[in-house]
Image (cartoon, rainbow, N blue to C red; front, side):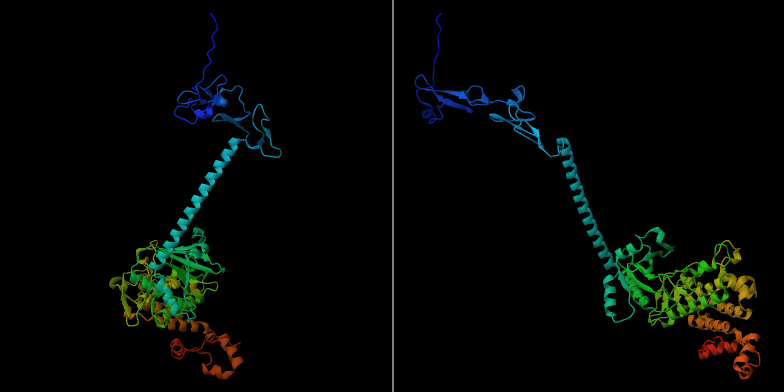
Amino acid sequence: MVPVVLDWAVGNQRCNEAKKNLTSFACKANSHCYDFDNGPGYRCNCSQGYEGNPYSPNGCSDIDECVISSPSPCNITCQNLPGTYNCSCPEGYEGDGRTDGSGCSPIPNSNNIPPLIKIALGISIGVSVLLLGGSWLYCGFRQRNIINLREKFFQQNGGIMLQQQLSMREGSVQYAKIFTAEDLEKATNNYHESRILGQGGQGTVYKGVLADTTVVAIKKAKVAEQSQSQIEQFINEVIILSQVNHRNVVKLLGCCLETQVPLLVYEFITNGTLYDHIHTVGGTTSMSWENRLRIATETAAALSYLHSAASTPIIHRDVKSTNILLDDNYVAKVSDFGSSRLIPMDQTQLTTLVQGTLGYLDPEYFQTSQLTERSDVYSFGVVLVELLTSKKAISFDRPEAERNLAMYFISAMKEDCLFEIVDEQVINDAKADQLKEVASLTNRCLRVKGDERPTMKEVAMELEGLRMMEKNSWLNDKKNLEETQYLLGDQLSNAYGGGTSMSNSTAYDSIANNAMTPFHSGR
């Protein structure tokens, strides 16, 4: 029944001596040693912030002040640390964050953005940077692929060969320009459909405006595989055509070889095609006979030049009214050389795959595949019939016997029914003798055998002669003759027999043989 107090200590050593022998030292982790105050030995106690048995093998364990303390020792954010804890304030606030201290208070003049919003903003900015970086990398790879592809097409289409040819001709006044794909994409607004001028079997023609404001026509051919020989021929044609300098031939300005098929760049002609003017929607046209004859003469002169005056003879191969363009003054311009062929100087014909337009195609070429200069003569003959009759080369709206205009014309000539098929305005404008001469020339152009057709040079000379006779027809007019007598005297008048006109054959021979200079008004 007497109270008992147990007073004890570990060993007989003080703390300093006991710590030297770690194997026998009784104070374990997270504890501290203190000397026994009632004799020898020492005791152990858990360090501040820890609890448990300091003598157990694992020692004392940490106290989580953020959890066990109530209320929380921190105003907003409490972070447990080994043996202690930490209080913090969010961004935009200041203080020690403790409930028993200064706590947290807003920093003056700071933007107090809630943490969630800041996190969202950070994520958004990060994602945006990733997207922009990815897009930049994609565009870079894509642009590089485009550049590589253009270089590949440039080589496939004979770009190196063309550059070599052009470098050899640097001293020449006329030469082709090599355009980049980017130049022509900008010129056509990326080949927008509103820029389309026309479409055909060879491809599509676009209107383009170059960086120097030059208006051009850009022909984009249909995709087709090309052999090495075809590439060499194309390059040769570009070189030849770029040097063709004739007022009645559409000028080839250059080409682009950075696309799958080459693009050709021509001068832009403003007034449409001959087909548009003689085959109007209403079926009538206001084109005078004088303009028709002049257009025929200019077209024949251009084809004659290509056949005989160009450095290498060129067969157009697709002469038709849609390939004869007219400028603002109705001057004819032969265009579209997509089917053209160059004739070597030692050859007069080529064996080719038959190509042309129904209604204009030379029947001999169709049967034999032998392409000659006379094939263009036949096609031009069909254009002459169009100018005479204002009818289309082929029309399934007409009776069967009249569907093919060339055959219908030949039949009318045999039956002496020329004036029944000639356009009414042409009959009113032209003289009968002159119409018969043009019709006779047309008939010869349309002969089945090519050898029986005139050459293009002969056709051009004869048309020029007929046109000069038309221009100088005032000599046959009595009123003009009297005026001539008054101005020039009786001597000139008597030389022409006092009003007797020259015969057609005499006038033509004079022009053909002596290159007679055209007369102009005596005034």
